[in-house]
Amino acid sequence: MREAATPAQRLRRVLLTVGPGAFWLVLFVLVPTLIVLVVSLMSRGSLGQPVPPFGLHNYVRFFSDPLFLEIIGRSLWIGFWSTLLVMLLGYPLAFYIAQSRYKEVLLLLVVIPFFTNFLIRVYAWIVVFQKEGLLNALITAFGLPPGEFLPSTLAVYVATVYTYLPFFVLPLYAAVERIDWSLLEAAYDLGARPVRAFFEAIFPQTLPGLLAGFLLVFIPAVGTFVIADLLGGGKVTLVGNLIQLQFGSAQNWAFGSAASMVLMAMVLLGLWLYARTQGERGLDRLV
Image (cartoon, rainbow, N blue to C red; front, side):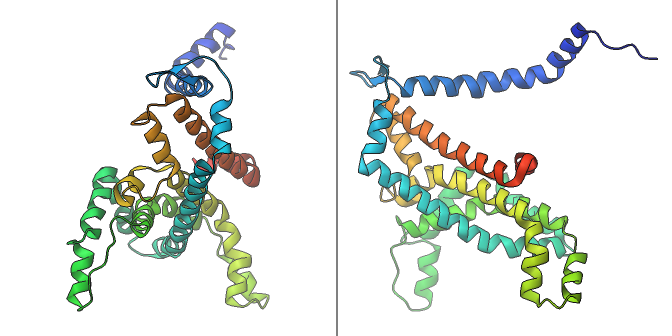
């Protein structure tokens, strides 16, 4: 019979298994976050460096300035509508992939964009939307005048939807694969029409994947700055661009850190709401 492990042995096992991962998270996630939090409470020095005194003045400035509130609102607006477009495209696509004989090939096509660098994919849309690009070439081929698609909000929406569509399709596909289709047959037997049968028997089973996909798209869409910077051309300023500006040309690390903490708080709030609505297994399903 195997002897029970002593406290020292259990501690050694924990350090050997959980220890390296915990050390990595503490060193590269927790410590930098605490540093950003401390810097966000400091003031701007003469050269832009964070200096005492400490206080909440950066947060007060952020939430009292209509310009910054407008940027937050624009980020949420673009993030919401981009996510909604992704859902409209990805929901039927996930069902089609799950019921196709070639699901492995289709899943490969969904994840193929991940094999290419994100920045290169964004630059590819510049080739499409620029004045002499592919889109205007197609338009002029039909005898129509070329349009000005770059920089524009339209280009930001299109690139955002394209970039984050796989993040929605994959978790939803996993939920569709677990659907109990006998419930649909039972709904038909009870006299439900197709639309009502779908929303009563099928849609609730896809809700965990739907919510997980929504968060996986909405959170990075709100915080993105590369897409808005390259395709928006300064006309579309999001909270990510604001943070980049503060750490760059504005040289105000303290205020940039405060804006970063606000964005992080928005992300954590979304994760908390998801965990509350989905119960204890909410975040497990998201991962």
